[in-house]
Length: 142
Length: 133
Image 1 (spheres, each protein chain N blue to C red):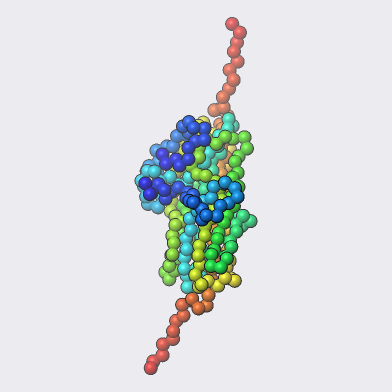
Image 2: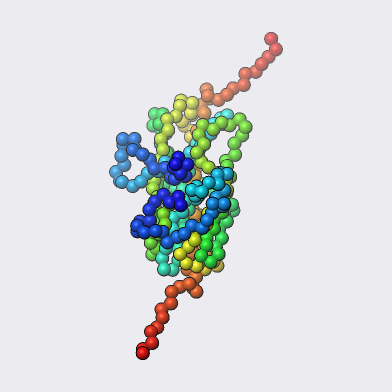
């Protein structure tokens, strides 16, 4: 798991990453350990918010899908157009297809998931599934 | 090991001896620099930045691009998984004389800054007409 920052609470992340070694087709490099895009996630009792830095993407090329407690993000960034006569002095920005799956700490309501792409940051808000919310059990007197 | 570093957001190391007043993290944006016949085009990835939060300054022959990002943590949630940090962007380049300083244009779209630096007349390729002699 190429997590570059420690969970601030010091214990293991509540998230498990699905085995996406075969799904990480980013710039043709399928080696595990290349996770793109980097994700940040926040959790509450009511849902999950996932942020991804995805500058310069056309939202039409983004595909977000949710099944139960699994979130999958797939997309691609197309390279800028350049003519034959153009020369690159530097080429650091990357292009191509990417896909990532994240297992969430609980099931979410797929129909109520919203996504917002602003200033190059994608924010996905996933409310917890009603059926998955904890229920208080009343204790009957003996 | 280097591959992993490539994927991580690059933090500016030991800033150029000029420190900022706050201790907030500063990142180096990935940049493409492309030279066409008439311009030099610089494209920088600065997710989280819009045109109001970008500063491009040219002093002597030093070009500085800066993007200011405010972390937007969702209310009522706790951070559970962090793979990247959020902070400002900054990168400094030295330009050669071949740029027409008065006609530099900058646009920001979806967190990407695009700077077009037109080449000064003297630097444009000129085709020499060939006559039979």
